[in-house]
Image (tube, rainbow, N blue to C red; front, side, top):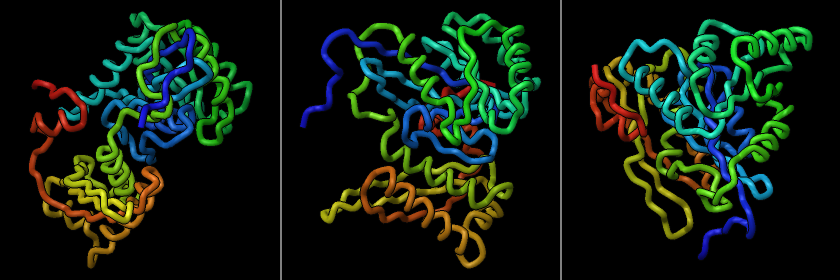
Length: 306
C-alpha cells in the first residue's frame, strides 16, 4: 500500500521548535497544533525528556513541531541531557516558538531563555498560553515587556487546553514555513515509533497515578510488541526504578497501583493505535541508570560527560 503523498505543485515544509520553562504547556500546545496526542502531558515538571516531533498539514504546508524538554537550571546528568536536547532542537529549527505561562509571567527561567534566544538565527515567535487565567490588560502588559526583552516576529495569545487561538498559530506557521518538499507522508502525525509512544503513555500514567510519590528517575521500556491474529497487540513493558522502596511504591499494596497504571495505560495505548491491547507490566530495579549511555540513546538523548 503506497503512502499518501504531498500535493502536486509548490509545497512548504518547516520545523518549529517549541521552547519554554517546565510546565508552561508546551506538550499540550503541540498536541493541539497537531490535532492528536503525540506528546504525553502531566502536571509533573520535566515530563518530556526527549525531543518529540508532531506533524501537521495545513493546505500545501507541512509543519513539524518539535516538542522539547523544559529548559531549567540542570542539576543532574539527565537534566543536562534534557536541556541540551531542547537547545539542539532550537538550533535545527526554521522557527522557534517561546511558550510562556501567562499566569506565571516572565519569571527568571523564561527571561534566561529569552536572553539566550537572541543569538538564534531562526524566526522567533512568542506564545502566551493559559490566557483564560489572566485579565486582558495584564496580558498586553506582559506582551510589551517580553518584546522589550527580545523582539519577536509575532505574539500570540492561546489556551492550548481549550484550543482558543490555536488555529491562528497553526495558520501563521504554515504561511511562513520555507518552500520545499515535505519530510513525512501526508498522514503521519509523529516520528515516534508505536513502541516508544506506548512506553511514554505508560510513564504518563505513572505520573498521573503516583503524583509526588513517583521516583523522578523511573523510566519505561517496551520489551516486546506482538501483533496477534485477532488484530489485537500484546505488549510487554518494564518499569525501571533505582531502589527497592521505589519498586514497592510503583507496585502498591497488593499490586493495586501497578494494576491501576496498567488499566489506564492500556486504554490510552488502544486509543492511540486503534487496536485492542493486552498490556503486561513488570517492575525492576536498575541502579544508577542515569550513568548508562545506552539508556540515553534509547531516549534519543546525548549522553553528557561529567
